[in-house]
Amino acid sequence: MISPTTATLTVHDHNRELAGLTYVYPVLSRRAGGVSIGINLNPNNACNWHCAYCQVPDLVRGKAPEIDTGRLEGELRGFLHALVKGDWLRHNAPEGARTIRDIAFSGNGEPTSAESFPEIVDLVARLHDEFDLGGDVPIRLITNGSLMAQPRVQEGVARLARAGGEVWFKVDGGEADAIERINGVRLAPDAISRHLALCASLCPTWVQTCMFRWDGALPAAHEIDAYLDVLMGAGVESLQGVLLYGIARESMQPEAAHLSALSSAELEAIAERIRKKGLTVRVSP
Ligand code: SF4
Image 1 (cartoon, helix red, strand yellow):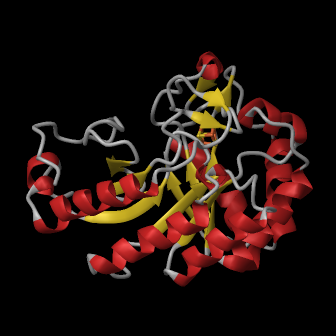
Image 2: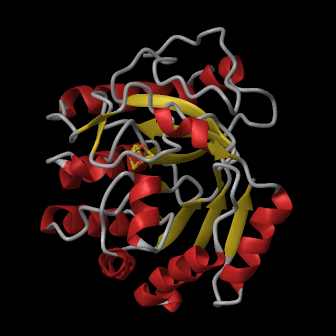
Image 3: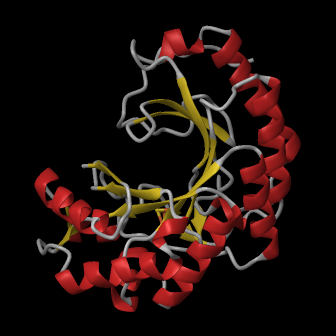
């Protein structure tokens, strides 16, 4: 069982080692409005993308290592015990945020790159049931969606749906050049649409989008048009909506020097353009 630490989580404190574990970490999340239990399948800081705004320190290209599922299970069971049956929340979370909002696959790289991803989804769903967390604490997959064509990943996403979970699928741009600049990967925009449509056919799916100024310039109108084309190419009726973020926390990548935040009004103007396509949009400046 995990001992309470004296640290209080803040929205800026995403230190994965706070609880002293390899695969499980707590985050007081502005996204989720409480404590999110993070599952980090990439303790090696390896991702197949390199997003300009990525907050992972010492990010390297690569995939998740082999996961010690016994250790993951022990860590998650111990941490859930400390939160649900112990006084971890009282010691570590501020008043008003002493609630578990979700269990999220959201680590230091792309979680679906773990070979045992489908089995891990089952493991997390089993513990979710064991602690009787119910529908108010969903299991979320936060993914760049790039491996969605792999049957193994589709199986994991389908299992997530059976566990009542949902996917947050990253789409930040709609032109190959913009995607390369923002996500550090060369991708055809219509491939993103296909992956997004496939994901949404398997599990309730939100699009997660981060927008910002690059070298002081707003996202150009043609870039937003192309971004909207990607969502429409996937079929807006199949999507739950869009979670539109600004950059609240500093990027840990060299590209950080190019980035600056959009104002709330600027993000809201982009949100309005997305809403006109028939999508629900939640904005987090
Ligand atoms: S997909 Fe996520 S982990 Fe990978 S580089 Fe982008 S922000 Fe970082």
